[in-house]
Length: 140
Image (cartoon, rainbow, N blue to C red):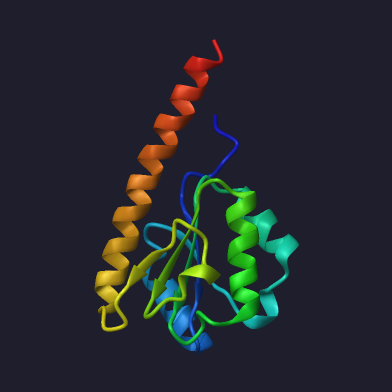
């Protein structure tokens, strides 16, 4: 039995709390999704929650991508968690986001974002499994 939950943890940080919660509700069939509110921005709690899952995602829209607290959380989480990824919907300032950040057009439909997230989560799960298997073989 693995000590990690293989269901991806997905944090949704959109400009409106209602919009974040609505999007999180739509992706709960394949993830452990939560709306990330400004009051939830404790780095230690965020990192601790991420550590319980194999993979973690942060989805941010254009309205929130310049939020200094969100950027700082993303960078801290990327350093602490090998399989932490970000998706930014809208124009991006690449220097403020971790290296593996996925950028989607501001005009992307929510269904396109959900499909991309589902596919990327699946690919990441396969990659994690392969990496774990290779590390096990190398340690023999």
